[in-house]
Amino acid sequence: MLSMYPDSSQDYLERLSKNADRLYTLISDLLDVTRIEIGMLKLAKDDFNLIDITREAVNDIKRRTHLSTKNNARIKVKPKIKLIHPSHPIIIHADKHRITQVLFNLLDNAIKFTNSGTIMVSIKPDVRNFVRISVKDNGKGIDTRIQPKLFEKFTTMSDAGIGLGLFISKKIISAHGGSISGKNNENARGATFSFTLPNSIAKK
View 1 (tube, rainbow, N blue to C red):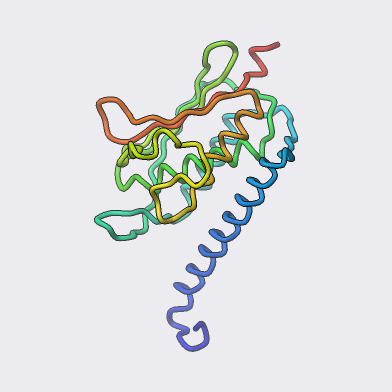
View 2 (cartoon, rainbow, N blue to C red):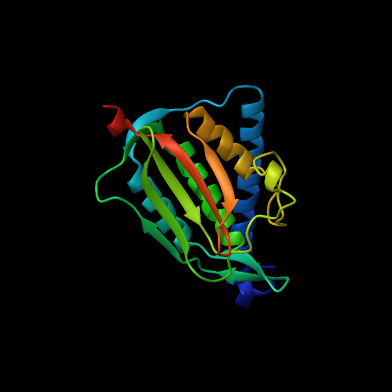
């Protein structure tokens, strides 16, 4: 196709890249599920600033072009994301790669179901020496049919995934001693997904 239609080569390369990324994500998710089910999900914990990796995840996902659904058609969107956080560092003892994976899962889900407006990402202290990270969108919200099984395998209302991201995210956060939840916004459109992690500074 590239040689036959050189004028369209950039479009073909973009499609190839996106589908390669999608395939890589799918394979990685399936491998993670296998590791979880046989008890081999291992964490490489270290101290790091949660604000830094959240900002990196937000900036990285802003640079990408995503697909969303509007009027039953797939359209390209560039997400608007706002990050709110304390002025001081939030140091946690966790697996940086796995926490970044959870952030990407939540941000990606928010983008899939949000066609306009701004996605709000917030980091703030929570009760009992924990920190809470929230991703709030103004999309169509969580379908009542999947709400009871939101964090189970293969639960999705999107045709762009197979419903493993939230299942894996819950297992990762639980392995860190935290919790994760998702609910529709009160008196507003969209949904908010939040997770908590132990705050290393607060423990010292």
